[in-house]
Figure 1 (tube, rainbow, N blue to C red):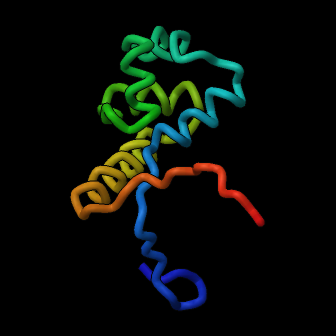
Figure 2: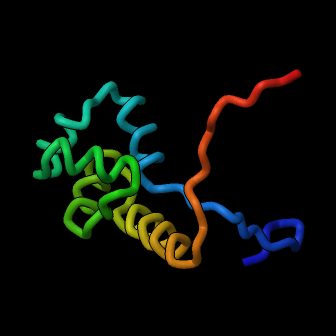
Length: 101
């Protein structure tokens, strides 16, 4: 889909939806264990979602939608986009510190 200026936005990387979820957790001061209890999954599963190792399933997306007031469809679209990007060979960016000289 073209961006506003008419140029398509097609990054060569993918971002796990868990990165966005992590921002929501931090904003609420919530731990992975606390979210796991609310979503009826383990803290380990939450941590796997955060790093993109485990997908956000339908039921989890519904609960995330309720907890964070963000429609479940959005979580599922982010997940689908992430998985499709991985299939296309796109990588997760690394934010290693660069040295400026």
